[in-house]
Image 1 (cartoon, each protein chain N blue to C red):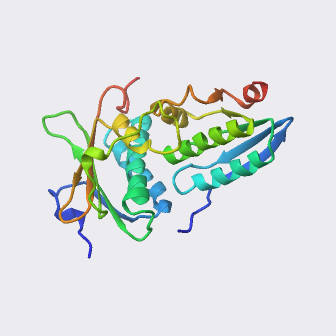
Image 2 (image 1 turned 180 degrees about the vertical axis):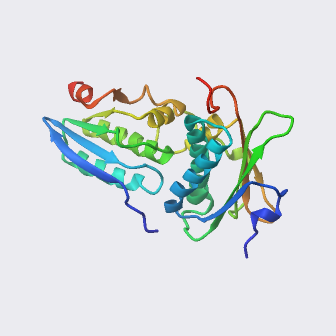
Length: 115
Length: 158
C-alpha cells in the first residue's frame, strides 16, 4: 500500500539533544513517516531526543502508538525522550489514553532542553 | 459482491460517505464528520473528538478487518439525533470484513503501556455509546451516539 507523506519533519541538533519538528496531522497514513524519523534520530544515540509537537494539530492512536514505541526504544538505547509544545487536541488524546504521566512532557522547547 | 450499507437500516440519514479502505482518505472523513457535527451544534473540541472516534473506527477496520487491503469499502452515515430526547448525532460505520465476536472487541488494559490497542478505548471514552454488531451476511457495524451537552455545545462555556 502506498503511503502519502504530506507531513514534514525537520531535525535539528541543539547541544546534546536531537530535536524533531513534525508538521502535519499524524494519523494512520502519516505515523510511519514519524516512526522512520525517530528511528533514524535514535540510531545516532543522542543524549536526548525531543519531539516538538506545536506543528501537530491532530494525532490519533497510531501516532500515540508511534510515540510509545519511541519511548521504549529510547529507554533501551539509554536516550532521554521528551515531548513538548503539545497542542490542545494532542494533549487531549494523551489524557484519554492516560499517557500524560507516562511521558516526560514540557510546555515548550526551552523546558524540554532544560530537563 | 458488495453489501451496500444503505440497505441494512432505516433511511433518512443526513449524510452517507463511502470510502476505500486506504489511510489517505482518513483526513477527508475526519473533516466531513467534524464539519457536520459543528453544524449540528457541537463546539470545535466536541466535533474534533467525534471525528477522532470515527478516525479510530476506520483505522481499526483498515488494520484489523481488512488486514490493510486498500481496495475495500467502508460506509459512514450520520443522522442528527432530534425528537424528544437529547439532541446530538448518531454515526454508523459499516464494513464488509469477516465477522468477529463482539464480546471480544474491547480496549486493552491502559496500565499495560505498549504501542497499539487504544482505538476501541478512545471510541468508548469519546462517545456516549458505541456498540458493535454483525451484519448479514458479512461485515461489522459500529453504531455510535454523542449527545449535545454543556461541555461540547457550541456557544456554551466549559
